[in-house]
Length: 169
Image (cartoon, rainbow, N blue to C red):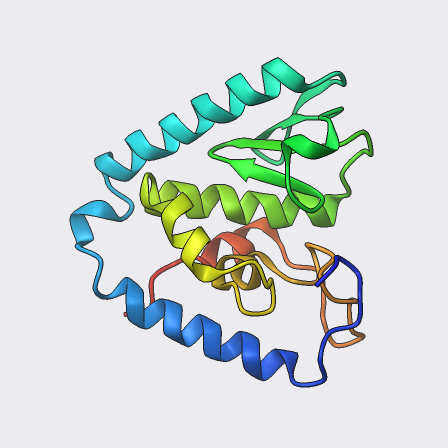
């Protein structure tokens, strides 16, 4: 699915099911790996990888926005879709990212903080379809431009967005 394209009519039900599966799976992950010193090391590693990749290929400005290091001017082949969040870095093309995109990416940063080294593996297994990928769903499909914003969908504050990644107990 391409960002901004029309999703299947049942996309909300599919997305809700993906979130439920993801939360059930999270209960199987040992708690010492989640939101812990170990996950912080994984987040730092991811941020270092993002900084190195961004420093090598970015031809645009590097800015600090919404708690993220935003590397603009990346060649298209260096990232998927509209950009990629690696640790605390958002790597993207020439366009200035909107506030909605930055909210979406800030949730991915919070996911990196929660999962650390597990994040790339879990994201890989969540799949490429954003309507079934729990990480994209948690980050907000509307903010990520995967679905059109409906009239009943309000903008989400960064605090609410961060709460989306909180574990369900």
